[in-house]
Image (tube, rainbow, N blue to C red):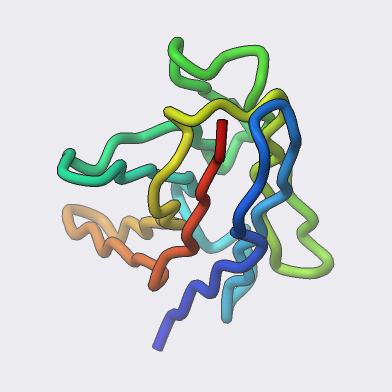
Length: 119
């Protein structure tokens, strides 16, 4: 069974930085796409960054310049580095990955890690 485990969240002051980590139970190369979603209180879960198997990276316009996505295949780990944190970055951050088998697509989620930014 594929598992994604996030860590690295916490309470941070505005202007600070955090590095979120997502460890996968399988090789990252087995995923079609991996990414991070954020769910702010009372809002829907939105994609903030993702990376394809070809290493093409996409960062949401709202966070571009502050969010960086990278991975360590030897450690089966994907990271989201967040700098210049703002109170509106507060939310639960979820790691996501999908695998494609022909016409079938399987999607996986971690349990989430809470990020709280104080002003």
